[in-house]
Length: 191
Length: 191
DNA sequence: TTTGTTTCTTGATATTTGTCAACGCCTTTC
DNA sequence: GAAAGGCGTTGACAAATATCAAGAAACAAA
Image (cartoon, rainbow over all chains, first blue to last red; front, side, top):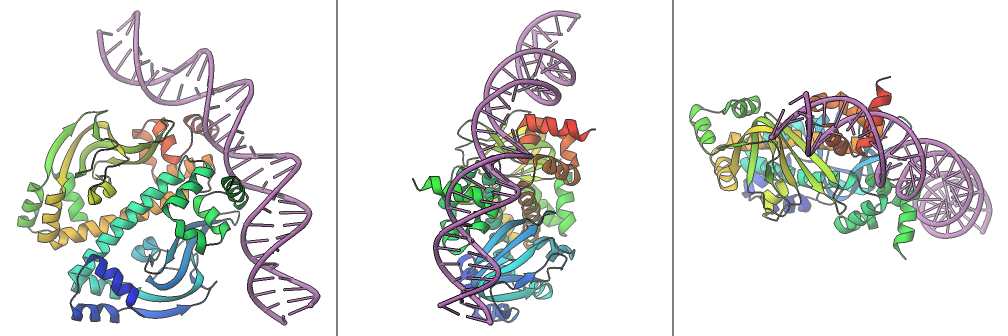
């Protein structure tokens, strides 16, 4: 149940057995089924979520009720609304389960404990934040000023795994085009 | 010369006098004039930049030579291409000086020293990365699926300071619309 | 001031993309 | 196995935005 988490930590830092034990016991395992909500608009995000196995996605709804996918999270990824988590303000995000999932939940108190007690844990978070920031900045580059076709090409290059695991209409929302436009781009693309 | 840096650190952590001394001496002050380049496409980003005073902006150039502004940095902000800085790969970004600036440069070796020697410094970086990540995610929300007018409205709400300090064509690029469209949006907006 | 450069505005037009609607396919559910 | 709902495709059209071009305004330099 904790293999992915252990792997993720070991990828960036080294922990003693005691530290790993302490770490592990601060997480709460949770199973969720497809279409369940982990967080809904207006809620406060009280836990960081580590995906052991499965898939989640987060999105906002605009005034016309259109979904805007913010991001996906698969095996070994973190998911949360950091803004709500750190400030305690209600979130504008929804987080929904895309595939039946095994999750590890970490609430704020336990996160603080780990940050205080295990310096390497704080290092781990600095590093994954760095990586997340780099990836997100790349996403901004790809979102601004590209045509629908270019956005799709970049997605294929940079995140081909998404295509097999995510319905096409969510992919469309993720790159910021309508489902119809994405369908047409794909049509042209195959010839 | 180090006031802004000190203020930024103190905002998130507490340092002893010795720690602050150690910290300070790892930065290299540098003055730069408007239109100078801090980093050019193809370079490796070897230093983190802290803006004591002034303004910078980073951008990419696409195949047609169009500028896409990634971000701005004003007094008290950090600027770098983290991807290039951490991996050592050449950058796709250009960083240019927007107003004559006083900068504090921190190379990778010194950054590592501070991370190792001062735990609070690592905490500081974790926290500002958190904040930067939250801000950037908000930017993605605003970039995807909004009309030109909505994007401009959100910029006014969320980053009004930009408007006084940045030429309009760079603002346009930053929110991902053409300068002409932004000009028209502003025209309508004032009536 | 004069000159030159950059930035901003405005108009005309072309292109891209979104929207609405219809249909077919596939999966799920009863 | 029939029915229902979700998802992807396609077409016609409308709306938003980019592009091109010209000129005005703002700013900087001589």
